[in-house]
Image (cartoon, rainbow, N blue to C red; front, side, top):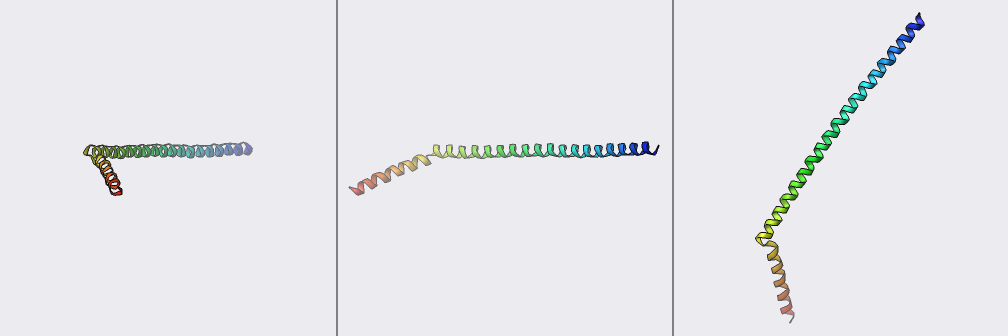
Length: 89
């Protein structure tokens, strides 16, 4: 009878340990899922921020071109080249 009680206790202990391991694995997998979701959200927001910054830079460059900054620089370069050539002659 005591042998049966010992086997019953060991079975109960084994089942309890399995349940504890299962609970730990469930907690770990939940933690991993939430961490991955947070990382994905962070990377998505970072990509949106980068896209917004690039869009602002593109708009600035477009406006500067329309206002003639780049064109004026190239005209100034041509003028400097002409005066440089005239000074050599």
